[in-house]
Image (cartoon, rainbow, N blue to C red; front, side, top):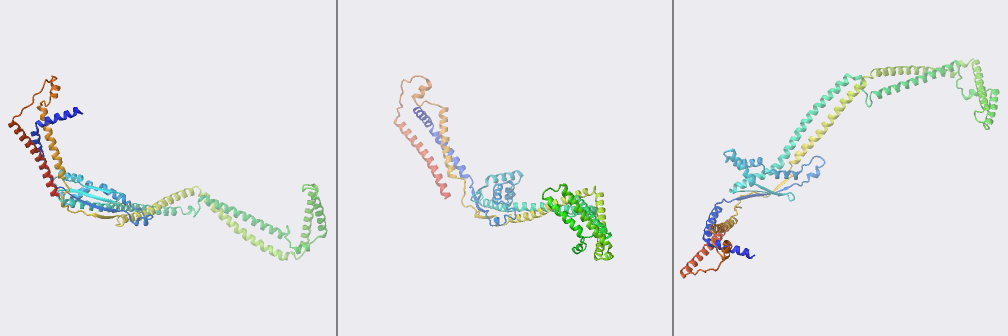
Amino acid sequence: MAELMALLLTFLKAIGKYRWYAVAITWVVAIAGWIVVYKLPNDYQATARVYVDTQSILKPLLASMTTLPNTEQQVMFMRRTLISRPNVERVLRMVDLDIKAKTVKEHERIVDELMTQITIIGTERDDIYTISYSNPNPKLGKDIVQSLLTIFVEGSFGGKKQDSEKAVQFIDDQIRMYEEKLAAGENALKEFKIRNMGMLPRQGGDYTSSFGDMTDKLNQARLELLEAEQARNAIKRQIAGEDMAPVTETTERAIVNPEIDGRIATVQKQLDQLRMQYTEEHPDIVSSKRLIAQLEARKKDEARKMRSIDPGANYSPMLQQMNVQLSVEEARIASLKARVGEYSARLAQMRALSTQAPEVEAQLAQLNRDYAVNKDNYEKLVQRRESAKLSGDLSTATDMLTFRVIDPPSVPLTPAGPKRPRLYSLVFAGALLAGLGTALLLSQIRPTFVSQHSLRETTGLPILGSIGMNWTDQQKVRRRRRLYAFGVAVASLFTAYGGVLAITLIRQA
C-alpha cells in the first residue's frame, strides 16, 4: 500500500510540473466539446399509445359455426412486422419524404434511418402498445407516428380480409371444378345405364344375389308344381276307385263290418298285453301289427266293393266335389308350369350373361363410387366456402378487434434530446482526463527526478544527502502568484462548467 501511495504521489508531482499544460488542454477540449454539443440539433420525440381489445362476445357465439381468427396472434404479427421495409416505404409516401430522395441510394438511406429510429414497445399481457419516433422536425415526427398508427390499425384488419378473400376464391375454383366433375359423372352414369339397361342390378342387390334368388324361386315353383301334380293324381285315383276317398263318420258307421271289427279289437287287446311284457321288436308284437294291418286292408276292400255295387255312387255329391277339385288342380298345374317356364327362361338368360354382368356391376360400382366421392367433396367445399365467408366477415368486424388510442400523436413542444447536461458533463470529464493525460505524457517524455528514492532506484548509486531550495522573496511572490493563477484557472474551468449546466437546465425548463 505504501509503494502504491508513493507511486501515486510521484505521478502527481510529475503532473504538477506540467500543470499549466494540463489546464490549457482541459480548457481547449472543454470549450470545443461544449460548442459541438451546443450545435447539436434538438431531437423531438413523437409518441402514441394504443390499446388493443382482443376480447369479444362474438367468439363464444360463433365458435361452433366458423373458424375464429386468432386476434392475439394477429396483433402480435402486426407489431413485429410494423417496422418492415414495405411499411416504412409506405410511411415515406404518406408523409412525402420520398420526394426529398433524389437518388435510389438516398432513398435507401432514408428508409434505413427510419427503420432504426422508429420503436414500438408493448406487452401482450396488457395489450398496450407505444409507437415512438424522434426527429428534429416535431411536425414530421408527429406525422410519421400517425402514419405508423394508421398502418398498424389497417394491417390488423386488411390482412385477414385479404386472406379470407383468397381462401373463398380458391374454394370457388375448386367448387366449379367439382361441379364439372359431377356433371361429367352424371352423364357417364346415364350413358352407361342406357347401354347396359338389361344387365344392371336392382336396388339393394347384385348379380350373384339376383341369380340366387331366381334359382330359389325356380326350385320353389318346381316343388309347388310337383305337389300340385301329386294332388291331381291322387284325386284321379280316388275318382277311378283305386283309392278310397276319405269317408265321414256317418259313412264309416254305414259300412261297419262287425266280424272284422271284432277280430281287430281282439288282436289289439292281445297286442296291448304283449307290449306290457316285450319290446316292439318281439316277434309276437310284430306279427300282431301285421295281422291288424291286413284286417284293416280287408275292411277297406270290402267297403270299396260295397260302394261299387251301389248304382248311385257315380252320382254322389262327393264325386262331384272331387271333380271340382280336379279342375282346380289342373288349372293350378297349368299356372305353375307357366311360372316354371318363365323362371327357367330368366335363369337361362342370367346364366348366359354371367360373364358380362359382374363386369357391368363392377363398372357401375366404380362410377357410383367416383360420383359419391366427388359429391361428398363438393358438399364439403360448399360448407367450407360459407364458413370462410363468415370468417372473413368476422375478422373485419369491429367488435372482434377494437383499437383505442390512449395517447394520440401530437407535435412535441420540448425536445427529447440530445441530453445536453449529460453530454456537457461527459465533455468536461473528458477534458479533465485529456489535460491530466497530456501532463502525464509530457512528464514521461521529459522525465525528472522528484525524490531521492526515484533517483536511487534509477541510478543505483547511494544518495549522500540533499540540498533544499532557498527561495528569495521575489521568487516566493512569483510562486504565490502562479499558484493563485492556477487556482483561478481551475476554478474558472469548474465555474464555466457549472454555468453551462445552469443555462442548459434553464432553457429546458
